[in-house]
Image (cartoon, helix red, strand yellow):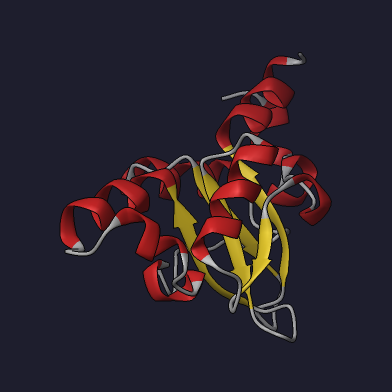
Length: 138
C-alpha cells in the first residue's frame, strides 16, 4: 500500500457540509428528497438544532420505505424526515486514517460515512467517489 494512502485522513478527502445535503430533523421527507436530488448524492445527513447528526436518509431507505409503508406515496412526503431515517448511523471522524474508514465502508457495504467531531456535530461526509479521485490524483 502506498505511503499516500496510509497517511491520508478522512479530513483530507471528506466533503464539507456545504457540498452535501444537510437538513434539519423536522424537515419534510419531500424536502430531503429535493436536497438529495439537488446535490446529486444518494444520502442526506439529518441534524438536530445544535448541528449534531441525528440520522441519515439514503436512496436505499426510499426503496425500503416504499415496500414497508402501507400508505400513499404522497402521504409519505408529509412525514418528518427523521421518521424514516437511520438513526445512530455508522460514522467516522476527521482524524481517522482513510484506510480504516475504507475498511468500515467495505465491511458494511456502504458508499458514505458521515463525519462528526468529538461532540457528534456533523462536519462533513466521506463519499467514496471523491475520495478515490483524490487517491488517483484526478
